[in-house]
Amino acid sequence: MISRIYWWVSAACLLSNLYGACCLYASPAPNSAIVDDNAPGWIWNTAADYFDPALYGTSAHACGPGGYGAYTFNGVGVSVYVYEARSIAVDERQHKIGRLKLLIDGTVASLVAVTSTESIYDVEAVKVGGLKPGNHVLQVEADGGWVVIDYLRITSAAAPPDAEGSSADEAPSAANASRSQAISAPLGVLAYLPQGSYEILARSNLLESLDIPLNITDDGTQVQVYSINQSARQLNQRFQISQVNQNTYRISPMNLPSKALTYSTSSDGQSAPVIIWGYQPVPAEEWTILEVGQGTYRLTPASSPNLALSVNNGTVTDGVRVNLTAWTGSPSQLWVIKKN
Image 1: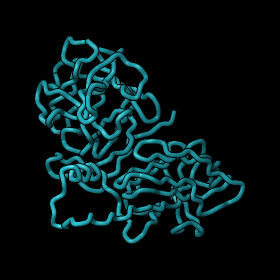
Image 2: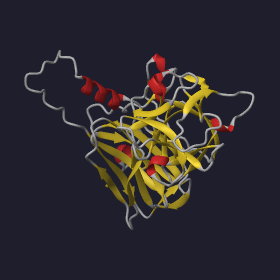
Image 3: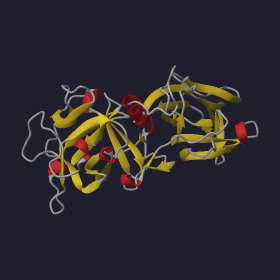
Image 4: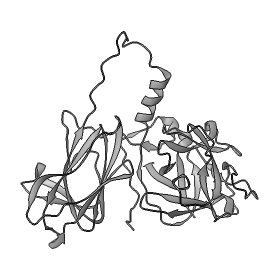
């Protein structure tokens, strides 16, 4: 199992009504499609600076087991350039070069060997294209050895021509405004949560916890938010979070360990009630947990990555139901996950 610690990238803050939570925005690479490994916006963890005059900018980042980097970019494609060799010397020790794992927006995009019997610079190890225009989160990590990340090349989207007869002063349509809002929303990067018991608190009102209505155990019971009981840790306000695979988690109420959070399949896909149901290893009952800054999280089902756990209508008071809505980064979609 591949271990991760919390990853977060923060380049700008949301408006003040986000209560101080920060968000992800694309790191700028003005007038250039190349992003060096030392460019602003990179987040490196357990990665060593690696210097060689033949590298782009004379440096790279070397990641060993558990090492990784994260970068948020705006574009429709990206290539990762590496240094290939049989091994590299870091801290006066030789380390075998292995494979590069690349994730885009939390999904594994490639796993490729970057080892070679000879030293080769400027190797395009992975090329990803066809992404939707907008912000994307790239994650690179070592797998089965070390990797040496030199630089990225970002492919930007061409600006679409103005529609015939349209005016620059014209107000955007509701559909386009909604799309623009979704693109500019914080994306988040994969978080690592050790298996255990957690409280899941509404970021805009930390006194309100995710809650299973007391004494209701039936499949289909809708999840709500309710004032957290400070004197007694109620099992229906605590959740067992356990890793299913390297990207997803099962979230089960402590009072109903055989069940898991999922969502109603009867919804139209735009707003889906979040419910409890007997656990089955299916994407609808597995969740991706992404950190969007300063310990604030986004929870999204693996089967619907464009949706996010949300307090209904943004009203965070006792008894308000929880559902899934299109991710916009609004305060009602942000959560604090607190280990018990």
